[in-house]
Image (cartoon, rainbow, N blue to C red):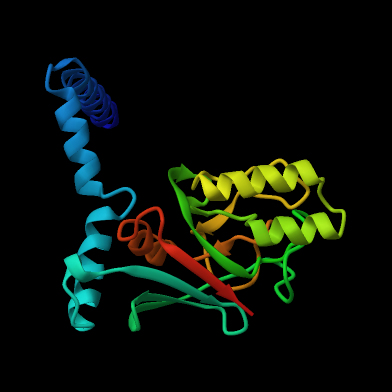
Length: 223
């Protein structure tokens, strides 16, 4: 009796394994495999795009704004560790943020663990970042470069490169002592933990931000 049960179990295992292999091969070998895989990713909503668009649409409606009239601006208050998403003077959303490990004061070097202060804008958007999603800000700015040159942290030629990138609206050089690339990304806002001074958000908030603002969006970071 025991031997019969064991044999039935073996047969079931082999049958299940064979059926699984056939199903996988059918998906991989069918001409429609790309559509099947794409549909699967859409259903899983890997980067939260569908949820984020729907959730942010509700926030816009609650603020009395139509999507066409949304003119985003980001305001990051370091002291209260919060980010406000504004449209002109209307607050659309508020998110808690994390800062660099040494949050007080302006950023002078790439290694000082500080979050910069000043006027910036979103200069690049990156999916598949090691911290989920990434909105790069154009740090260092010309003001950061001028300060760095006066304090002899960078060379005059490097200041000129940063200024040129700003004028051409290109991402700034990130190979100077000022550091970079810096930006806004996911992986949590519980504590001040970023080593480069970037701004961290909870992933669910980062998804809302990433999928609803474009490059060129102004970013103000204040003490």
